[in-house]
Length: 385
Ligand code: NZQ
Ligand code: ZN
Image (tube, rainbow, N blue to C red; front, top):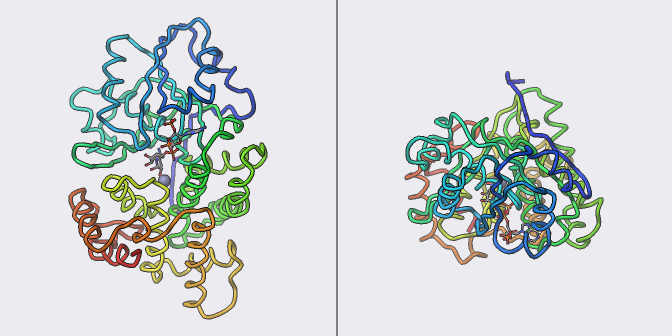
């Protein structure tokens, strides 16, 4: 096992009617900016519930944070914070609203141009406003991690940053809040969480059976519950387990002491920035062909994953790996997510465009061995056509 430090300071409040507890979780005299996305938080009544729970506190609302939140919109929230002397932020929504809130929390106290936070991966963040979240979409793990992904529309750049200063103080996870999700978003959430686990698990062995078995348990739960979640939108137990899996997939725990990949995410971000494809869908396009191209260096873990998740024990190693990749692709398709660039009307010309962006962003040594250069990315993308 590799050395590590682990500290996760986010307080999780999980269960039905937990929103009422906001009154205790948010400081009594706070001036609160409540941030949310398009229309869903209003339509579902979650926003009203939140406002009610905040009681007598001074509250200002900031709506309109997009899926794949943009720097342009978020800077408007920063202006409101400064004008209104806001001292606590509350995100109500999915990963986009929570990520957006993290950026706003850091940008509001940042000296200089806040886009530099993204250019420096967050290493230059020395403080941030405190914030909490009310999660409405299980997918990203943003509710219990210190990462955030922000898009700049003008230059079609989607970049991420991490900082210990942007862990949420608390996150409320009420599974009933996911009952209103469109099927498409449920599927996205399952696939995103699945790939988060894979990116931390499916690299090379470092004799870390605790992390491996945690990851395998989470993967098995997703394989079992994912399809059920599509057809049973109001089944509390399914949604509760899904919500906790997605949080556990990226709250740092399974990734401590093991190598990470993240190449699928980095290539996927370019696809979203260029063609506005949902985050999870980009992962479903890239991952199967990445596993194929990296089959040699990932061999041992591919075989272990095949045996323990898909029960693949027969055939030569190459045949088993073929089957592992096919089963993974089939799972994404079963969730209703297409896995080929062609399915999204993209062809060889687009591959060149994606590669240019990867190079521009310095994504030229990706993966757990930093061996995915532009040529290897080309292979991966061409294999995804
Ligand atoms: O905007 P509204 O109207 O609220 O609608 C949203 C949005 O259109 C809707 N929605 C959310 N909760 C709902 C609901 N609709 C009905 N009922 C509800 N309860 O769902 C749509 C998608 O929401 P979004 O927040 O964009 O989805 P998700 O949670 O999948 O977040 C995706 C973003 O997270 C980033 C992605 O790159 C992407 O920008 N990621 C963040 C990570 C992190 N912070 O650690 C890691 C991930 O790998 C990921 O990159
Ligand atoms: Zn993701």
